[in-house]
Length: 230
Image: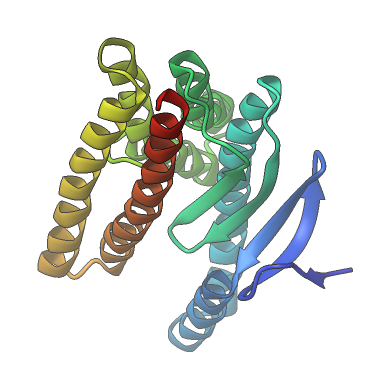
């Protein structure tokens, strides 16, 4: 049975590998709104096909986030939950490893899952001629590549920080990754407004908020490090 999760504004819909899978209210609102709009402007068959495609894409997002979670589990890091938003998902791992190799592996695990799904869907699409599988392959390719954009705290931004941590250390690498992330966030918002693409505006706004949270977490790490060396 569905139960409300411990976080206001979301609902737990399943548990996979002991990890709660949750839907944010905005995701539910998007589905209801899209379904109502489609039912009003198209026929029921088109609505059904669109919902099936959305469900398959939803599954791809869950698998992407599970990729992060399983990689984190390999290094002994627990994932509290996976929450799905209209613009994607978030795997809430308990701690961000300061070990560059571990962060790199955890970050690339999600896009790697998308790449595996492309390799799974594409051959079947070519053999069967079923365009839906081909579209799923394309969407997974886009999802994986988009997440590799070096816009911290997206996957690509975490990869960038892991690489910069080797020569510059965790703190300086984090500050550099956050600065680049803010630039991308601004570009997403401006691009979304210029082209009236609400999803880009949401992603840009999310990045600004997430970077603020990460900056406060980094400040705590700096204070802790200074206290230990004092």
